Every structure is written in C-alpha cells, then in structure tokens.
Image (cartoon, rainbow, N blue to C red; front, side, top):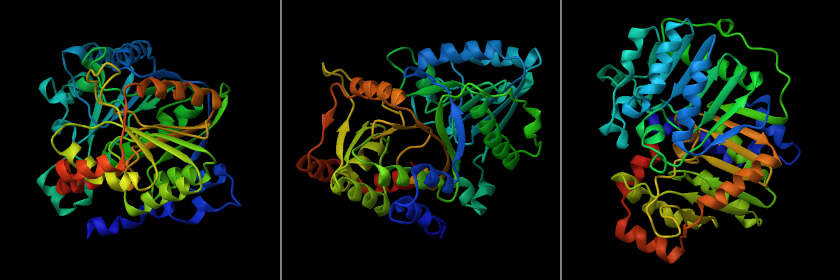
Length: 409
C-alpha cells in the first residue's frame, strides 16, 4: 500500500507542465516549487580531502552560527580535526545545529570500519538530532522508515552556503587523497542561497525536533553578489521529478548525467526515450558499486536503460586499468548551459522517497568547467553495448537486488 501510494510522483516525466511548450523553463521550474536565487561562481571540490580541509577552516572562522545536514555522518581518526573545530566553535558561543539521518549508524560503506557515532557532540553544546531514527515503533508507520533525509548542506553565518553529494564520513572525506569516493561539493559566498537553505533547514528541524527553532534565529546579510540565475528545489510531491523532467523535455541537443544507481521507473524511461528519439544526445556516466547488492541490481536493469537510446558508460578504472574509487557524484548538464548539482540522484528513489536538494544554475561558464571535469572522469570509462548488457543481466543480474535498489536507492 505504501509503495502504491508513491506511484504518481514521477508523472511529470510523461506529460503536464514539464512538456508545455508555451512555458519557459524558468516558469516550469517555479511551477514545481523551485525558489529563485542569485548565486556567484562557486568554489568546486571533487576530492573529499580538499573539502575536509576547506570546511574545517570555515568552521574555525565561524562567528555566529553553523547549520549542517548530512545523510551519513560519523567521525573517525581522519575527521577528528573537523569535529574538534565544531566543538571549539560551540564552546566560543557559535550556535551549531546538526541534522543526521537516522540511517547513519547503519552505514554500509567502508566508514563502518572507522566509524564513531556523533552523539558525543551533544555533550559539547552542539544541537544534534536524528531525522527519523530507526526503531521498532516506527514499523507502525512504514512511511517514516522509507522516507530519508538525503540532503547535504552547510550554512555558515548566513553568508557561506555549500551543497553537494559528500557525506560527513570516512569514505567521503577521511580516506585520504585518491582514496575517498569521487564526489563533489560546491561552496557559494551567497546570502541569497544561504537564506533559502536556512528556510529548508528550519522546516526539517522543526518537523523532527520538539525544540523548535525560528528563521529569525539565523540573520542573513544583505545580498548583492549574485551573478547567475539559479533555482533551488527541495523534495515535494513531484518537485525533484518535475525539475528533471522539465530540463530533459526542454533539452535541445545534449544531456550529460552522473546519475549514481540509475534505476528508473517506466515514466522516467519514457522521458529519456522521447528526448533521445528527437535527437537529444543523452550520456550517462555511472559507477558499478561492488557492494553486494548494487552491481547485480544495475546489471539487471542495464538493458532497459540502454533501450531508451541513452549512451551509458561505467567509470571504474583509469586509462591504465587501475581501480578507481566509487563515483558518487550527482551532476546534470543540459545544452552546455544548465547545471544541476546537489544531493539528488537520477533514480526512482530520489524522485519522491528522500528529502533532496537540487540547485539548477544557468551558467555557461560553470557548465564548461564541469564538462571539462566530466572529460577527466570519463578517461578510461567503458561504454556498454546492448549485447554486453543482455549478457551481464543473464550472468550477473539479480532481480531482488534491483528491487531493493528501486525503493532503497
């Protein structure tokens, strides 16, 4: 019953506003709940070690407040400096509010071998809550177990805002240069974006904690440094789906996707087939996650994905054949102009079974930088053929792994 009740949140992929040619793309995004913000060019981070150093420095310089939300959050030897910086900030009077998803303690990445849970932060004055902690009582309302908070965001003093795909754990930030997952974070000096993220943070905090906070608790300086039009999308009934559908339906010549676990429903498949059928070049670059269930699920679905007309690459080795860290990055670039960054994967689960954040930026300059980054990522990538996909499904595909990925991500 729960899963059936979620069946309609991908309808935007097959019709409605996302396909209305009388509307501009901006009007479509706003229809689906996007909030307009003006942003400057961001600092980009594709290595967790460099991001760890940068965010630790920013925490050290915070003066008023720090807001953090992460899907998987834990400490380890390599991350102690960052968490020590948070403790020091709280001790000098900075208000620190921290949301971790309740699944953090069940992390299935390499972090589990290096994991210290974060509850100790409460002893130092840090306001830490879990979103939807797993418990037997929540079985009475299964939707509370299915819906997760997958967002990753930082706001510091209402001026610095960061979003992306990196969790605050060992495999995302602490494994060391060349060993952390390949991922991305984007840092903006933007009161405008900070204000929007504060609103999202306060809403999710107050939906979870009995100790409510107010938007007024977090003052934001006057804006004035935005350069690019951007649109912030948070999970709604169909907001993330509507954003992706509108961009793909409006694409004129190209779509580049780093989807991570691209298990799609029939509506999403039809959207890709329609776009590729009218000549849009759609390229996906994905990992093959070798953790137990994931590879079997991807291989089971791979022929269906190729049947949409999408060109699919796997990125698991470099040009010399050396194994690469997992590609966990989330990215879409449309027509060398529109860039989508944030926490959202391009899969069924992220369309409506997770709280997500996505930022659409209208910037040819940023698109060019990220397309060059994609070229680097694709060095050594392998392009799948249909014959190969059919063979892999037969030999290594697993329906139950696919089903788990479909709803579990």
